[in-house]
Length: 304
Image (cartoon, rainbow, N blue to C red):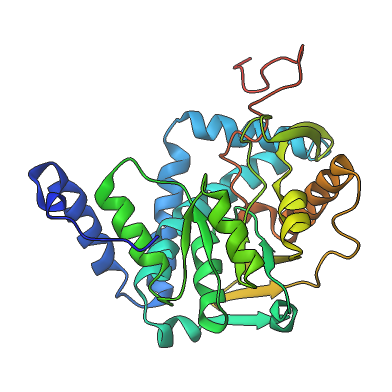
């Protein structure tokens, strides 16, 4: 989808949105170390404010890391909220920094794994650095992506413009537009795809995620089978001491897909776990990954 500006975006009901976006963009001109410091402060504020998302993140950490001590779990939770604050800043960096400026802080490994005669299904996960990761790939290669429409039309417009700012060849597909995505893969394009969230079981199944059954979409296997695309995992991690970001593209999944959809989906979750464990505190734990439960199971997010 190519975003189009509409005169209705200038209506008074959107003025607050424009003010917020304007201030956000002004802040992004500051030096990188200062931006990270601001992100840290935002993260601390988010951590101190009671919220349902904090409860969800704490519960996810308890489910996925039962062997950690309570102190270690709380430490991981705190670091995760710091990363959520940094994500606000990093989203602005991804959308509004110039290609030249962004290129200075991104370090790549394995770009050759994106070179394929067929399409590439780029297996991504919802790190807090998601926007940086996508923008970084666009510095070096063609990539399309999936997106979820924002209820605020102005924010949705700015979001789409930001995500295409590094390449006007980038095509963004609304997440329900599977047909266009499949066509892109069949035409040899690279498409980002994140199967690590709970979208229910209409197009998914329950398979283990860190040892607990989780509703997982089966699209990775189905898309690869129909399009003959290579499934290529990648990670994008913030480095310490304001050194920037490391983007690693891994070799394609061999012998994938198989004839067994459940085996494929289980394998995808295992790969997602591996990517998370590279830097657990930079994963989006505030998502209700265990929202849908097998019949008879209790709600895992029910306050105790």
